[in-house]
Image (cartoon, rainbow, N blue to C red; front, side, top):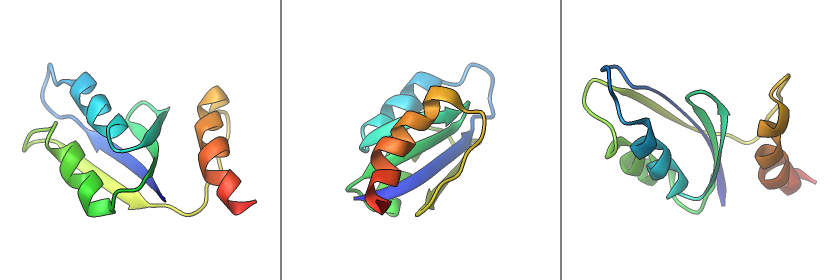
Length: 92
């Protein structure tokens, strides 16, 4: 399993955030950390995650998938739970 941080900008009014969220969740265990920042634990490669999520977006949008191996956060409440459960448990 690999850990990823996914972040994106949907640039046209009326964009389908639900479709992007569904695509991210289809890649593995995912949790929204900030409005358009997600943590993902997945058996997929970064290229596969990028292709899957990009398919739910259009050509004016922006998408970044980062292979992430450590995390620190502040003031993100229960959004930290998925990171702590899936990511930090691997380091223990």
